[in-house]
Image (cartoon, rainbow, N blue to C red):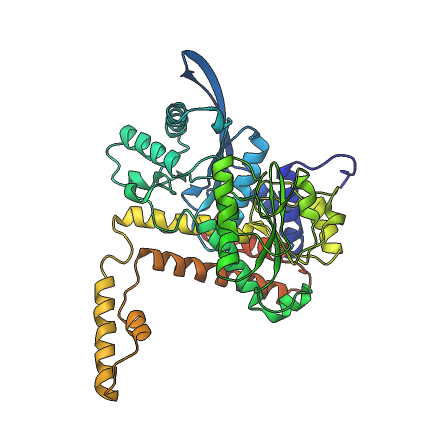
Length: 473
């Protein structure tokens, strides 16, 4: 590699990982270069008046691939955003969408800003101005480029962007589909906020359904009682940890945050930790755990499952040898660098890769986008019909047996699926089906010996097929 004394950039790390799959598939060098190349990146500098003074903000929007339209990817507001990061994240979105069969290309955006330093009104002016710039330059549209929330953004920012687009294009009846992750009252879909974290859990559950994979990782069957270290208790980490704690009865023994790490070998109550963070803006002082300011050391705690759900490049060549877990589940984008990945593979630590694990967000974004284009919520037409059919089944069962059905039976059979039920069902099916595709490659191709390479093999095969079908080569 020639990179022994210099750490790889985020985009270089992603490309080196992709190269493994390209080598396995023996793809032509020219086609390989075309697949990895970022189609276009726009850098925008724009002024906004804040407290009587003009501030100039810098943002980027990158489209990695438009082999499927629209291109899809979040917009993050953070003080560490840069062009390389945005392009790397856009590339990951291309592969992610292909892995889970979501018909989007890959895109990403970022604004260099610390959102915590501005008031709500300031952020609204900044967000709307950034959106106008992206819209006017063709980088935001229901048909070509659709953002979503990411670090530092949420439903509020997406609502501002959608409203800005509507006022610039009042003739577009599909304006609500210009972004996803909106409030439900403004065209959003129930289940989107939790989607990425829930998708992480669905991926882990599917892994544990495959006894051979669990055994190969050196783990015992079942999620119950598994010792888990969670890095990051933002949107993704919170929902993933909460579900693992409350529904799967796993033990979250440590939570790593920017200001330190909380440890409790008996397991942390996620809801209590989240409430403490909301109240005090820090994990320090949480009463039911041991606190250390050395957050990085939290990644090195011995555990069954390590879930990095914060930023990229958290596990590097510097600390990879000290990681003491059997399974790493990449809930964040790019938390393991290419160099670290090589070390961890040599140590036989199983990694479920980001391009698959955190695809829950874009999956449910796809559901929202389709909902916006259809102009009708899921379940509206069929729910009452399903309930009626269920009631008829119960009546028939009672007539045949002469007995009243039990209450749980009445509840289950006589209720139709609402939108949230359908979203969760679709997300679960997507994560399970995608895992099985990775598993098929892993089991059938002797050149593939890890889930990350399998995920990129799956993605690249689909992208190449798309290129062939449309006559790109």
